[in-house]
Length: 191
Ligand SMILES: *[C@@H]1O[C@H](CO)[C@@H](O)[C@H](O)[C@H]1NC(C)=O
Ligand SMILES: *[C@@H]1O[C@H](CO)[C@@H](O)[C@H](O)[C@H]1NC(C)=O
Ligand SMILES: *[C@@H]1O[C@H](CO)[C@@H](O)[C@H](O)[C@H]1NC(C)=O
Image (cartoon, rainbow, N blue to C red):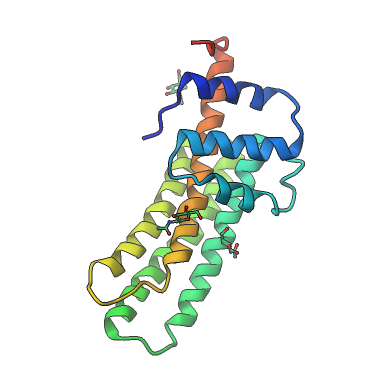
């Protein structure tokens, strides 16, 4: 899905190993993420990471941890929001879908928690898999509403936020893996 290019590698390499001003690092990381993965919106990425506590002192790996943390908070909040919506008067076809989304987001809360644990212990494959399934959950939830005419998803914005935040996490994990390989392989980055 994600294919790194030589020009990106040129950017990623100094990003990982040189001390860069914090502001620059957030912008640089978001830039690389949005270039290597069209899912990631640069603006969304910077406006999500900048206000996050600790982000200005974080390195790239730290920014990854923060993005997973943000995803976790976000899906927890959305799960609570769906619970509130389920108490309101909706048609049965919407209610049915909200119930599905509630299940999906309940799993997403668990998955982001486990993803954080995997990420911290550098089990990037596992973290990648878990965050991918969180991303899928948001898509599945949103698509449920699309499959029936005349109903509108009350969760579009939130599903999109989950999707975007997961995308940032996945993209940073990718940077970490590529960066590690380049170090090991003697930095063949001039291509
Ligand atoms: C979820 O993410 C969106 C977009 O960044 C943000 O507007 C919202 O406040 C977040 N919610 C939580 C609980 O983090
Ligand atoms: C999701 O959010 C991003 C960033 O704010 C935006 O560019 C994109 O158009 C949104 N997608 C949908 C389907 O709303
Ligand atoms: C990193 O290197 C390992 C072992 O050589 C390889 O299996 C893996 O696919 C590489 N990852 C990337 C992102 O290039």
